[in-house]
Image 1 (cartoon, rainbow, N blue to C red):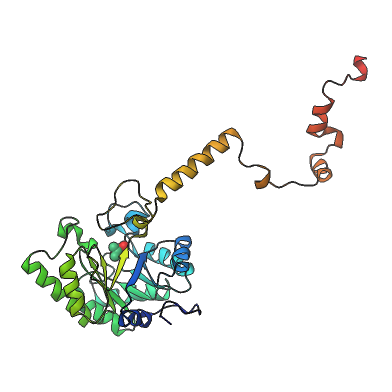
Image 2 (cartoon, protein in one colour):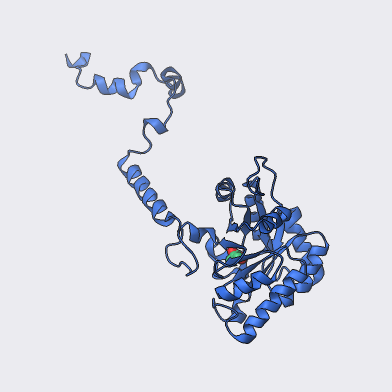
Length: 307
Ligand code: KIV
């Protein structure tokens, strides 16, 4: 039986992910930010869910991940954990919640686990983050690394560009991967890396690589769930594939609802409830003769005074 097909609903751990990797099974990871979506993804058997700080752009409408706070990450991590029974939930450490002092890094990672309920945390950076990863892992908190394009450094990187394309940048990326592994990370995201380099890095590691825009040679893939579902009206990154078109599905449903409300066909009898007529008479202080249908049917019948 594979690590993801147990009839027991025991929550997966980093050991389950290590087993998938050892079995050579590619690992499908998605982001999740809320309870209902997390439930669906968990029911679909996605073994690892990332409460990514992409939350900032795709859910909260910020212009970058840099504005996402610990409070926001905790709020959404809790919702995703409540929505899942099986998936390993990995919570992103937001900008400057790590890497400033070891104490603060540890405290924030600890909060995402103890208060948020996550099973692991993710943080960005290669060699520069190795000591932080080591500190957190030593405290017993599983860490996923993230190298290549690291969105929290977007102002330094100068845009969403493929990383590691020159000799020096490629060598640095390989050094980063080895440093993250050496520091104790159980897996690492490779974002926007040429597929040949990502495959070569994957071959040289003994922990799984989870690619996004890094080709098929990684140990697994992660996608931003709103890209997968076609939920955005405008931008879809080159590396993403729409598996459905939720934007137009939701829009069509909302337009149909709006029309039904305007013409009065929603709610109908099926969506309404009725009560005992005599009780209603009592509430309104009226008799059966005062009911709208009686008043209506008596219209046209001559009254005594008219005779
Ligand atoms: O925040 C996020 O969604 C991520 C993925 C792009 C890996 O870090």
